[in-house]
Length: 140
Image (cartoon, rainbow, N blue to C red; front, side):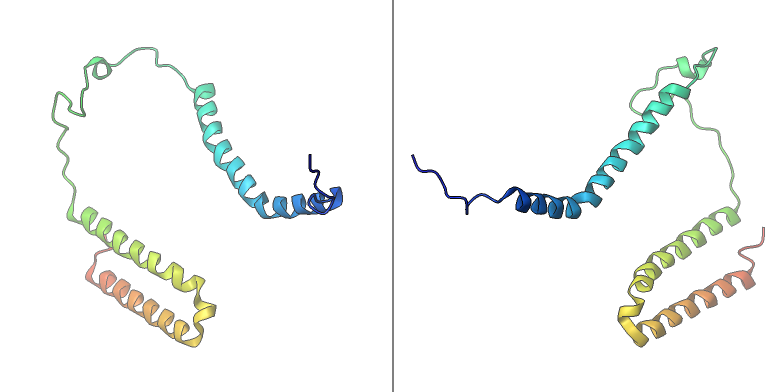
């Protein structure tokens, strides 16, 4: 039977240092995993703890509902054009913010070129905002 010499096994002090280094590297992931599990679990527990049952069941709740098809048509509602226009403008400016975020994060690394591009992008957004304001798209 062959026993390995002491050089193949780390000493208890070296093992402790290795464990501390591994733990230091993985500690943020452990914290994130705990929070990622705790937040949904607390939501589920709170929904059971604070939920209330209705005293009477409405008629619509007793009707069968299968495959996403209801028995009747939904009530007709009319929306004004300004509602749709505001929704489209929100989407446009929201997408512009999505493009601004990576540029803002890497602005220091891009230097003056990135700064000039950033200002140019902001000027285009301001011109578009003034245009829709002058056209009356934001007036209700």
